[in-house]
Image (cartoon, rainbow, N blue to C red; front, side):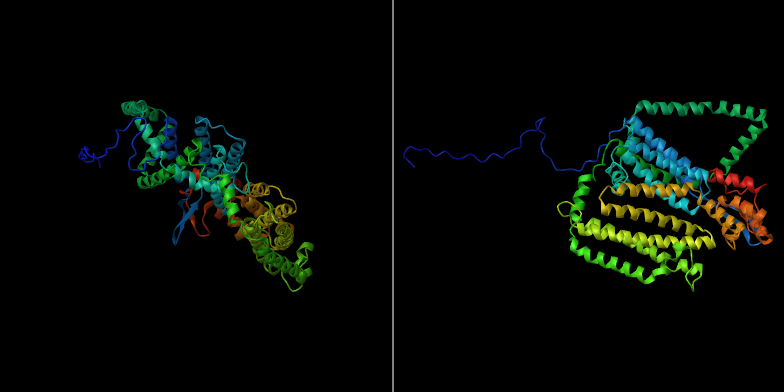
Length: 551
């Protein structure tokens, strides 16, 4: 320090204060979770309200109805009436509502969306045409899944451009991811509708107008009821209906309908606004596929080769016994029932296992230079060919059994399932020879098989085959009780049996027809008409069968 230098005491440090926030550069604050924003307008509000109505109708129309059909010494006899026409109407309203909403949102319907709408409608129409069967329940579940997945094609947000191997991924995306990502869409739409002062005032004016018009409406109704007896009866029936109105049933169906409306609103809103539809992408699926393809081809080659060798030895050991069904002959020491039952379901199970094995190998095996390994392709092709032979053997056994003992639902469904499996393995085998987009034809076969079975009137086929076989002498005996357990499709065949069979069979067929008409077995006094049957259970086939049975 040199002479003459003056020490200046340091001022205390001035605390630093953050600069004032600039409008273009807002200060960073603590991170806070914000609710997702849902831009909505009047169309979204109408959709939300309309889907509440549709949700209520779904539960009110689709659920089975119970009612008394007669009584005996043990008490009242009840029956279950499953929906028919109601199923068709619910899905027609659902498809129409979604199409209208997409049109308002200016989402142009693609070819896939049009085809999907046609498929959903084709799946819903049989409920109004044919009487309900166990297949209807399974078909209804598939119909619900198809309707939900169809929104991806209608909204042009599908991961897969067409039916194929990625269709299950689209079903997962539409059934779970999109609704979850848009869970608040219904509430946003209702709030937006409530904030619209103009629309709210219109609703208020409409309600006020209805209240003011009540005296006028009452006076007009009273005069019209006095002027026409039939109209008076209609109004009396309407009054009785409201007198018997089930308030609690209405409320719980409305609550379930609201839950369904939340789900469907999120589904339609997400696809129309493309919100949450890109969580699962084709690139993501490709990355996942690459991540799981870690198994070396040598690890699967040995098990596949062993399986193929086992099947070859099996065919060689069984020889003529196994293939007797192709010739329509019965091996010695067997009845037809024993021959068909011994092996059919086991062979069917083996075919399913082989399909799972081939699917696992395709998904898990490591690619070589981006290609499916040659070893896996050759062994997979051999396994497919051997499985085709197994399936054909199982089909021949069941066909031989049916030719002697007739059809039942289980036999017909099993036979159709094996034929479909045969076609699927044929396609898979062809893919192993020369690669192509095998997922699309497989999906088309599965959809066509289900729609074809629903439109083919399976109960009618069963009843007609059995009755014609018995009357012609091809089938020695006939189980009338089994025919009575079928749907209304069996009535024309039962009438033929009543008119053309022997005395005992005629009596049994007549009793079966009487029980089908009333829902009561022998000794039961029927209620006419059954109080549980309503328009929701109506079908053209049941209506026609009732007219035939009354003759």
